[in-house]
Image 1: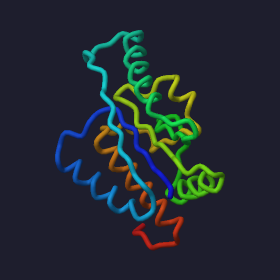
Image 2: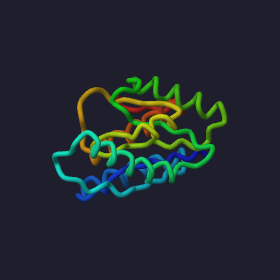
Image 3: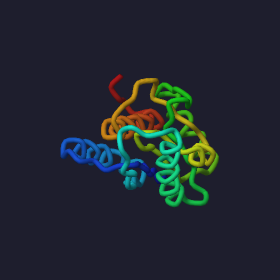
Image 4: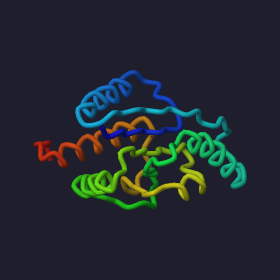
Length: 160
């Protein structure tokens, strides 16, 4: 069975976000084992120097890298990554699975993004476009797209 892990910096605070995540995890469970791993975000003031920004990203990145398995295929969500249609994401996931990657981890960084170390470890960088989204909304969007990809891979109807 395929394993999909969503590694995220930060926790969901509002119940309606958590309910949406629970619903998509339930839908996805027909296709894969799904695990959500929430990692603590660094407490930091609003105004940070460039060096402090790097320290925050580095600390969050170390926590994330510690949770990535040896043979796990890592997809880092990154604004500078590849922008794919739902069909293209499905094709990529199918090719990763066809290459024997049965464990795929999607990494959602903190508010400052991923550390250089996480981006260096990533097997693929995926972007959902140029806008910035809250991590709560983004987690739901990612789960929806992974669910849609499985529906596409299985030739099942899914609203366009």
